[in-house]
Image (cartoon, rainbow, N blue to C red; front, side, top):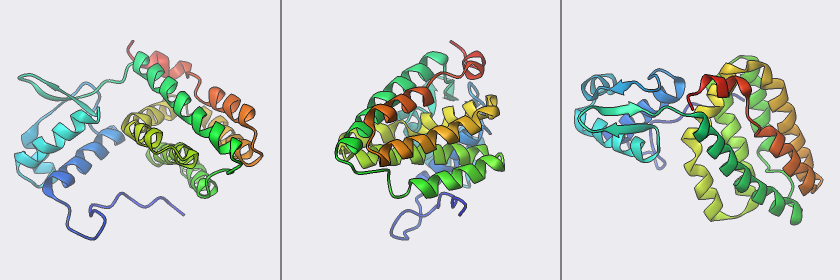
Length: 224
């Protein structure tokens, strides 16, 4: 089944606030690459695009700053954050720590792979075959998030979720710069599932370490 688009209505059916609508519009556009890294975002232009006043847009930009989508530059406004090679390394290092802890706990308690893993990977492979890199990257994040959730540590899950915007942006950049890695990514995901289902923590950690290795094409494409 294809991944449904992110709804503009929050849970419970209530109408999304203007600030929430602005936030989702801008964040989605950044993830899709419509607003280039390093570019400045004009509040008036954003307000017209979203169909709101500037106040909800300003609220959204403050939230996006907190989530590391944009930097707020004095007297210049919001600038789409540029992901550097150093930041990429730090994100991968952090992911390795959190996901390794989750994998160890999953295998130790013989919990097996997350119930949703097979469906997520099936959807991801479909997206990859269609070269739908935005969906591919989101599903990649969902798969790894499900592993952390399966680990059962709520604090680590919250910390991992905070990485979501940067995880997805990096995943999009990685697959765009090196689309030939798609088969390797998909194979390693399947190997992670197998290791969890056979409770092999050593193998799971080894696969994860290989999975999060640096991609030369991406390092060369990113500033230091």
